[in-house]
Amino acid sequence: MGKIQGKGIAGEVYEWLKDYLTDRQQFIDLNGVYSSSQTVKYGVPQGSLLGPRLFKIYVDDLPDNVSEGWVYMFADDTTGYDIGDNIDVATDKLNQMTGEIYEWCRKNKITAHIGKTEAMILSQQPFYGPVKPICFGDEQIKLVTTTQSLGVTIDNRLTWKEQHKKVIKSFSAKLSQLKRMKYLPRYVLEEIYHKAIIPNVTYGILDWGT
Image 1 (tube, rainbow, N blue to C red):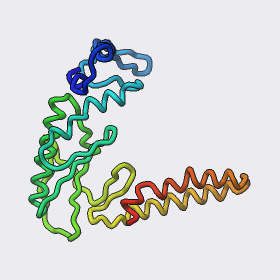
Image 2 (cartoon, rainbow, N blue to C red):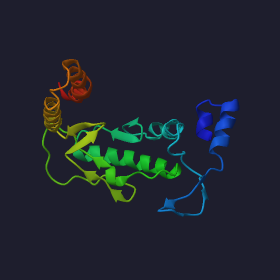
Image 3 (tube, rainbow, N blue to C red):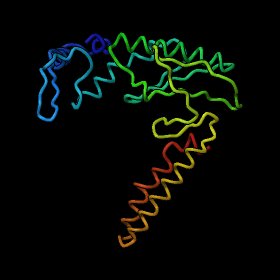
Image 4 (cartoon, rainbow, N blue to C red):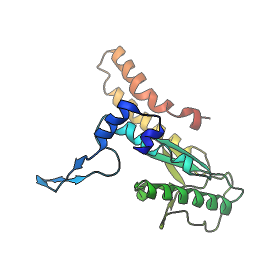
Protein backbone atom coordinates (compact mmCIF):
# COMPACT_ATOMS: atom_id res chain seq x y z
CA MET A 1 0.00 0.00 0.00
CA GLY A 2 2.97 2.27 0.52
CA LYS A 3 3.76 2.10 -3.20
CA ILE A 4 0.16 3.01 -4.03
CA GLN A 5 0.44 6.04 -1.76
CA GLY A 6 3.73 6.90 -3.42
CA LYS A 7 1.87 7.28 -6.73
CA GLY A 8 -0.34 9.95 -5.17
CA ILE A 9 -3.37 7.69 -4.81
CA ALA A 10 -5.33 8.75 -1.74
CA GLY A 11 -8.82 9.22 -0.34
CA GLU A 12 -11.64 6.91 -1.37
CA VAL A 13 -9.65 5.26 -4.15
CA TYR A 14 -6.86 4.37 -1.73
CA GLU A 15 -9.33 2.97 0.81
CA TRP A 16 -11.07 0.96 -1.91
CA LEU A 17 -7.77 -0.54 -3.08
CA LYS A 18 -6.77 -1.25 0.52
CA ASP A 19 -10.01 -3.13 1.10
CA TYR A 20 -9.56 -4.96 -2.22
CA LEU A 21 -6.03 -6.15 -1.36
CA THR A 22 -6.31 -6.80 2.38
CA ASP A 23 -6.90 -10.33 3.72
CA ARG A 24 -7.29 -11.97 0.31
CA GLN A 25 -7.30 -15.77 0.46
CA GLN A 26 -5.89 -18.28 -2.01
CA PHE A 27 -5.82 -22.06 -2.29
CA ILE A 28 -4.67 -24.74 -4.73
CA ASP A 29 -7.03 -27.01 -6.66
CA LEU A 30 -5.23 -30.15 -7.87
CA ASN A 31 -7.60 -32.51 -9.69
CA GLY A 32 -10.45 -31.63 -7.36
CA VAL A 33 -8.35 -31.83 -4.19
CA TYR A 34 -8.20 -28.48 -2.42
CA SER A 35 -5.46 -27.20 -0.17
CA SER A 36 -6.15 -25.13 2.91
CA SER A 37 -6.59 -21.40 2.33
CA GLN A 38 -3.73 -19.01 2.99
CA THR A 39 -3.74 -15.24 3.31
CA VAL A 40 -1.95 -13.46 0.46
CA LYS A 41 0.64 -11.16 2.02
CA TYR A 42 2.57 -10.10 -1.08
CA GLY A 43 2.08 -9.57 -4.80
CA VAL A 44 -1.07 -8.75 -6.74
CA PRO A 45 -4.21 -10.80 -7.56
CA GLN A 46 -3.66 -12.81 -10.74
CA GLY A 47 -6.30 -13.03 -13.44
CA SER A 48 -7.97 -9.78 -12.43
CA LEU A 49 -8.50 -6.62 -14.48
CA LEU A 50 -6.57 -4.61 -11.91
CA GLY A 51 -3.73 -7.14 -11.74
CA PRO A 52 -1.51 -5.71 -14.54
CA ARG A 53 -1.94 -2.14 -13.30
CA LEU A 54 -1.20 -3.05 -9.71
CA PHE A 55 1.84 -5.04 -10.82
CA LYS A 56 3.08 -2.00 -12.75
CA ILE A 57 2.80 0.09 -9.58
CA TYR A 58 4.49 -2.65 -7.55
CA VAL A 59 7.60 -2.88 -9.75
CA ASP A 60 7.74 0.67 -11.12
CA ASP A 61 10.47 1.80 -8.73
CA LEU A 62 12.97 -0.89 -9.78
CA PRO A 63 14.97 1.40 -12.16
CA ASP A 64 15.24 4.00 -9.37
CA ASN A 65 17.04 1.43 -7.20
CA VAL A 66 19.72 0.64 -9.78
CA SER A 67 22.68 3.02 -9.69
CA GLU A 68 24.70 1.42 -12.49
CA GLY A 69 23.55 1.21 -16.11
CA TRP A 70 20.05 1.51 -17.51
CA VAL A 71 16.97 -0.61 -16.85
CA TYR A 72 13.97 -0.83 -19.17
CA MET A 73 10.74 -2.63 -18.34
CA PHE A 74 7.79 -3.83 -20.39
CA ALA A 75 5.05 -5.74 -18.55
CA ASP A 76 6.96 -8.45 -16.65
CA ASP A 77 10.06 -8.33 -18.87
CA THR A 78 13.08 -6.40 -17.63
CA THR A 79 16.21 -5.55 -19.62
CA GLY A 80 19.32 -3.92 -18.22
CA TYR A 81 22.42 -2.79 -20.07
CA ASP A 82 25.66 -0.94 -19.45
CA ILE A 83 28.74 0.20 -21.37
CA GLY A 84 32.36 -0.65 -20.61
CA ASP A 85 35.73 0.12 -22.21
CA ASN A 86 36.57 -3.59 -22.15
CA ILE A 87 34.97 -6.94 -21.29
CA ASP A 88 36.15 -6.96 -17.67
CA VAL A 89 34.82 -3.45 -17.00
CA ALA A 90 31.50 -4.31 -18.69
CA THR A 91 31.01 -7.51 -16.66
CA ASP A 92 31.90 -5.72 -13.41
CA LYS A 93 29.27 -3.09 -14.14
CA LEU A 94 26.69 -5.73 -15.06
CA ASN A 95 27.39 -7.61 -11.83
CA GLN A 96 26.85 -4.42 -9.86
CA MET A 97 23.54 -3.93 -11.67
CA THR A 98 22.34 -7.50 -11.18
CA GLY A 99 23.37 -7.31 -7.53
CA GLU A 100 21.21 -4.23 -7.01
CA ILE A 101 18.29 -5.82 -8.87
CA TYR A 102 18.67 -8.98 -6.76
CA GLU A 103 18.57 -6.92 -3.56
CA TRP A 104 15.47 -5.05 -4.76
CA CYS A 105 13.77 -8.37 -5.58
CA ARG A 106 14.65 -9.72 -2.13
CA LYS A 107 13.21 -6.69 -0.35
CA ASN A 108 10.04 -6.76 -2.47
CA LYS A 109 9.50 -10.55 -2.16
CA ILE A 110 9.83 -11.07 -5.92
CA THR A 111 11.46 -14.18 -7.38
CA ALA A 112 13.18 -13.70 -10.73
CA HIS A 113 12.98 -16.57 -13.24
CA ILE A 114 16.71 -17.28 -13.51
CA GLY A 115 16.03 -19.95 -16.14
CA LYS A 116 14.75 -17.26 -18.48
CA THR A 117 17.47 -14.76 -17.58
CA GLU A 118 20.28 -14.30 -20.09
CA ALA A 119 23.34 -12.09 -20.47
CA MET A 120 24.99 -11.04 -23.70
CA ILE A 121 28.20 -9.12 -24.42
CA LEU A 122 27.75 -6.79 -27.41
CA SER A 123 30.90 -5.91 -29.31
CA GLN A 124 31.80 -4.92 -32.86
CA GLN A 125 35.08 -6.78 -32.49
CA PRO A 126 35.42 -10.49 -31.62
CA PHE A 127 36.80 -11.21 -28.16
CA TYR A 128 38.56 -14.29 -26.87
CA GLY A 129 39.27 -15.89 -23.53
CA PRO A 130 37.06 -16.50 -20.51
CA VAL A 131 34.44 -13.96 -19.48
CA LYS A 132 33.84 -13.22 -15.82
CA PRO A 133 30.62 -14.87 -14.59
CA ILE A 134 27.61 -12.57 -14.41
CA CYS A 135 25.56 -13.60 -11.40
CA PHE A 136 22.14 -13.02 -9.89
CA GLY A 137 22.50 -13.74 -6.21
CA ASP A 138 24.30 -17.08 -5.95
CA GLU A 139 23.28 -18.23 -9.43
CA GLN A 140 25.24 -17.65 -12.62
CA ILE A 141 23.38 -16.10 -15.55
CA LYS A 142 23.66 -17.94 -18.85
CA LEU A 143 25.86 -16.11 -21.37
CA VAL A 144 24.42 -16.22 -24.90
CA THR A 145 25.30 -14.93 -28.37
CA THR A 146 21.68 -14.36 -29.46
CA THR A 147 18.59 -13.49 -27.47
CA GLN A 148 15.00 -12.35 -27.87
CA SER A 149 13.85 -8.90 -26.78
CA LEU A 150 10.14 -8.23 -27.22
CA GLY A 151 9.98 -10.56 -30.20
CA VAL A 152 13.12 -9.29 -31.95
CA THR A 153 16.21 -11.51 -32.20
CA ILE A 154 19.43 -9.71 -31.27
CA ASP A 155 22.92 -11.12 -31.81
CA ASN A 156 26.09 -10.07 -30.02
CA ARG A 157 27.55 -8.39 -33.13
CA LEU A 158 24.31 -6.57 -34.01
CA THR A 159 24.32 -8.00 -37.52
CA TRP A 160 20.59 -8.85 -37.28
CA LYS A 161 21.22 -11.97 -39.39
CA GLU A 162 19.16 -14.22 -37.12
CA GLN A 163 16.30 -11.71 -37.12
CA HIS A 164 16.38 -11.59 -40.92
CA LYS A 165 16.26 -15.40 -41.12
CA LYS A 166 13.35 -15.55 -38.69
CA VAL A 167 11.33 -12.93 -40.58
CA ILE A 168 11.98 -14.57 -43.97
CA LYS A 169 10.96 -17.99 -42.66
CA SER A 170 7.78 -16.66 -41.05
CA PHE A 171 6.91 -14.50 -44.08
CA SER A 172 7.34 -17.44 -46.47
CA ALA A 173 5.20 -19.72 -44.33
CA LYS A 174 2.39 -17.18 -44.10
CA LEU A 175 2.49 -16.49 -47.84
CA SER A 176 2.13 -20.24 -48.43
CA GLN A 177 -0.90 -20.29 -46.16
CA LEU A 178 -2.35 -17.32 -48.01
CA LYS A 179 -1.82 -19.08 -51.34
CA ARG A 180 -3.93 -21.99 -50.10
CA MET A 181 -6.75 -19.50 -49.49
CA LYS A 182 -6.83 -18.27 -53.11
CA TYR A 183 -10.47 -19.32 -53.37
CA LEU A 184 -11.39 -16.39 -51.10
CA PRO A 185 -12.41 -13.01 -52.55
CA ARG A 186 -9.50 -10.71 -53.38
CA TYR A 187 -10.50 -8.09 -50.79
CA VAL A 188 -10.44 -10.76 -48.05
CA LEU A 189 -6.97 -11.91 -49.13
CA GLU A 190 -5.74 -8.31 -49.12
CA GLU A 191 -7.18 -7.84 -45.64
CA ILE A 192 -5.34 -10.92 -44.37
CA TYR A 193 -2.13 -9.83 -46.09
CA HIS A 194 -2.11 -6.33 -44.64
CA LYS A 195 -3.30 -7.24 -41.13
CA ALA A 196 -1.76 -10.67 -40.47
CA ILE A 197 1.34 -10.86 -42.66
CA ILE A 198 2.84 -7.40 -43.22
CA PRO A 199 2.95 -6.53 -39.47
CA ASN A 200 5.10 -9.62 -38.99
CA VAL A 201 7.66 -8.11 -41.39
CA THR A 202 7.54 -4.49 -40.26
CA TYR A 203 7.58 -5.11 -36.49
CA GLY A 204 10.73 -3.50 -35.09
CA ILE A 205 12.04 -2.83 -38.59
CA LEU A 206 13.42 0.59 -37.61
CA ASP A 207 15.95 -1.31 -35.50
CA TRP A 208 16.83 -4.40 -37.50
CA GLY A 209 16.11 -3.06 -41.00
CA THR A 210 18.80 -0.37 -41.00
